[in-house]
Length: 179
Image (cartoon, rainbow, N blue to C red; front, side):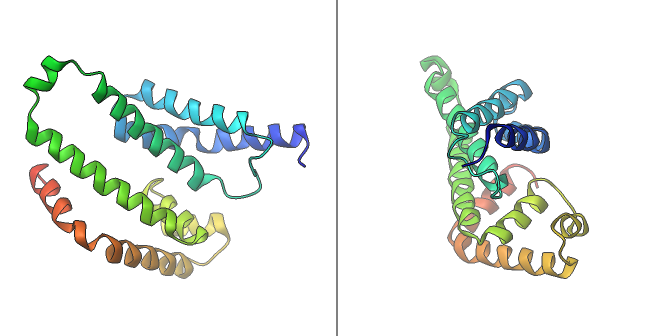
């Protein structure tokens, strides 16, 4: 059992280390900085409430990013539920379908990411979501850049294999968004 001072220290360290990147990560989905901050705060509140059974010595990064991702999607779902019928009548069906398809693809991507081995997942998240360079990741983890490259190749190969059936959604989304 971890003592309270240790738990508080680890919790504060986790908060300082990840709050900003989690907020920007959430903001990509919800589109509003204040809402994103609220979502991230709620995730940290939940961690604090479960602090007695939360393992602060394990890597918490993927847990935090997954929790923020899920809460961001829940927020979007709830916002859609509370939209007035008039807005629903005037909304463009094509845009709604695009968002649903994009959300479905993103959900599949996260399932695949979460199925990766822990180190591979951490490296992938650091590179793709925290936008860290390979050298920076290697230095933080105390591994070689070649190891980071190998883990990224492995992650991308697994993503390609599991998401090959969704390539049409990605291509349509990219074409419609002007990429």
